[in-house]
Image 1 (cartoon, rainbow, N blue to C red):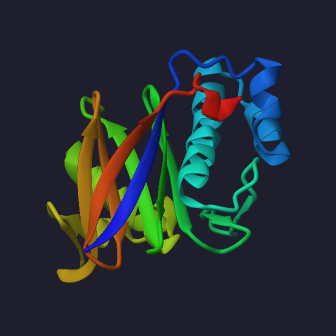
Image 2 (image 1 turned 120 degrees about the horizontal axis):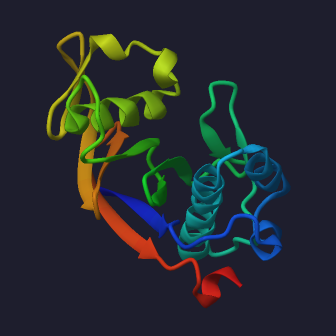
Amino acid sequence: MREIFVYAVDVSLLDADDARWLRAVSDARARHIREYRRASDRRRSLGAELALDAALKALVPDYAPPPKYRYLKNGKPELLSGAPRISLAHAGDFAICAISDLPVGVDIEEKDRRSPMPVREWVGIESYLKLTGEGLSGSFRTLCAGEDEIFLLGRHAAHLARAELGSCLICAASDEPARLTVVEVCAFSEKFS
């Protein structure tokens, strides 16, 4: 079985307005962070790149910070090197980065989030839409998320792997069955200095 690692940063104590953090992220992310009006959005945006940085430091031997990536036309992040594959998400007090040698899409949602669709199903559907790069403009009304599979018009479309983190549900979608390993990263450790 293949593996998907999810690196998670608790953003509740981050100060995204602190210039030291902005020096630790890519120029594009620093500009993006400054564009947000709400402090909580700035923290989550910063946390997503800190999670990506931690994942690359742990799993890519020749990695040199800051992360070098771009967003494809559909909004899907891609490392400039092409591999490994990544996906970013955030909700509540967490920002996460999924990283794998498989194509991957990841989502995180708060368990008590108000939604017309059950959160457990929604997190599966959104992870699949991130895997395909369709995003919410995609065909989400034709999708149904089971516990470990997602179906498109009643046919198998992808595999799902799930985990919980604090008050949140995490789901990763991939083309092959994969084990999901969540690694919590402390943003105040020496990894980020």
